Length: 140
Image (cartoon, rainbow, N blue to C red; front, top):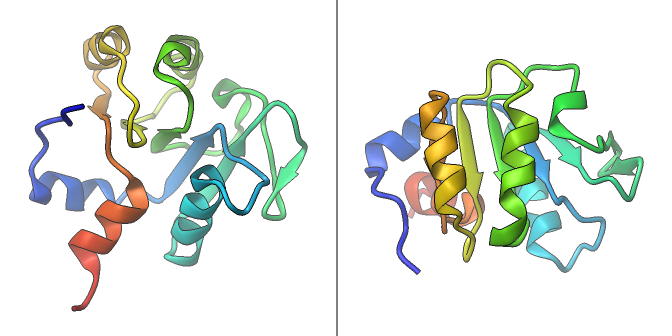
């Protein structure tokens, strides 16, 4: 699967956004949908879990939908199958201020990208927020 065409400089700027709603966040510590947001939280990001099957993850309130989140959301990081992306995008459009939709590795939905861009929201896909953060900001 190919990835979006954002440059490293554009990616670095996206990490200036600090409020990240994580759709599909998991309580299972072995799943990327758990350890990626946990890594982001340890690196200064405000993680907001979105998972309708639980009330709390990593000691943070979990929401059923992005549109229910009271605080500001800059990025919606999605851990769902490609076929399940459109309902998430339709819901998040109800919330004002979202700047970026980030689909994790192996995830892409062309219709979702078209809708996001039409609504002025940046769209990244088939990229891991943890891997990109380490690649762009690690002091090696």
